[in-house]
Length: 209
Image (cartoon, rainbow, N blue to C red):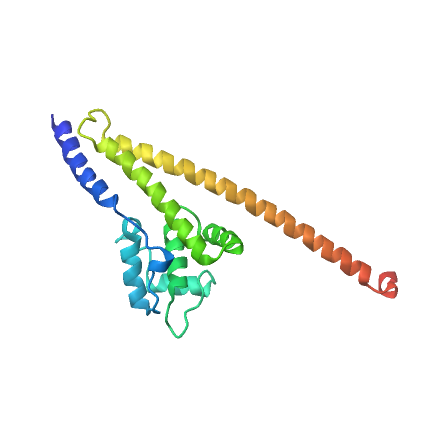
């Protein structure tokens, strides 16, 4: 009896949250502020935009985090301490993906995308994919929270979601490692070719020595 009451209460809270999250949306490129912003304005917007991904205890974004990203070259440096929509786009992608991927992997993914497409297209595509994935997860959670569901408890659903997330993460990391390995091999081959060309161009007297 007590377990059933607990289940009903938790399902009610979860269903309310799911209904709220169905309207969650990440602003597209043309919806980002056109004016340049100062650090405190950027932080306020990031907290608003990150929504479900924002954690009060372990903050996803802070001034020191942004400064660190700039120092590492992960985000373009601000101009006169002001940040444009390009900065916002980079920060949103990084802050969302870093929840599940190492920061160097996140930047590799962004680099590969921006080499093929303009940043505004990369950003908008990212938003669409993230929203589609989140919506699928929310709908799955809504079905679980349905009043007709009398079998699965919250703990069971959490375990199922964690397993799914871990599996997706493992696949993404494996693909990234394979991609990095191929890039490394290609880089080594190019270096070998350069060394061969240098050897050929050396004067005969130097080669004899």
